[in-house]
Image 1 (spheres, rainbow, N blue to C red):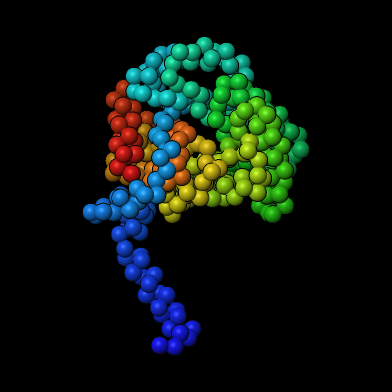
Image 2: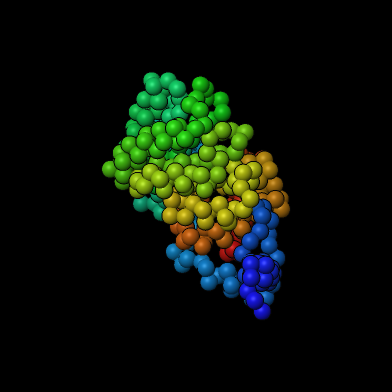
Length: 317
């Protein structure tokens, strides 16, 4: 047969169709919140892609567990085997000793720091941008003292106006600002972490791949990104693909139920994280998956159930 352009395309497309129909693709892909069917032999095909460094390390934000004091909250977390706590950055510099004392002798460490800065870095007002830089550096220094994985930051929320236009010049400016911030973070043994949000909350930076590409372009060990299952439900076509796109830059993960942003499991069958966990296993993710969510029921009942659900789905992945 003469291999002309038409025959080449026909042969190539036929091969592609066979590959797509194969068990490896079927086993390794599904849409967010959906559980893919597993046929005999499919799981082993995916398992060969899993990085043995991957580990599920669950974290609670400080206000997630019940308790009237930090120590009561940590006691509760220890009973559930939670190994990370995510405080707010607001006022953190004055709480460093409090956290060090409370965590002493426990198998719990500070995971990421949840924002807490003032101003926003994409403001048109230089004074507001400076306020953001200055307060972020204060939080970063405290995060470094606590051994935190990084400080979460959103470049601009929808309600923060006036903001710089969504142009290439703004992106370049953002890279310059975060290169400075990232260098400061690296000097303190931590990072700054870009968080993509859904379009209802943020006009700029909505997908993990966008955040990772900025990290790549800045090329600074102090600048990283994260994924949040709640925002990913609206913005990503694949949880697994999103986390893989984050790759080496993925520093933190948030989790919540997928309809009401409540505890995992409170939205029933919609709360499926297996596809995303597959992606995390593939890239060898071993940092924290932290609860950022509300609660519809009794925390003493709902929280243990949520932890159990995530651990079961991690094993299933």
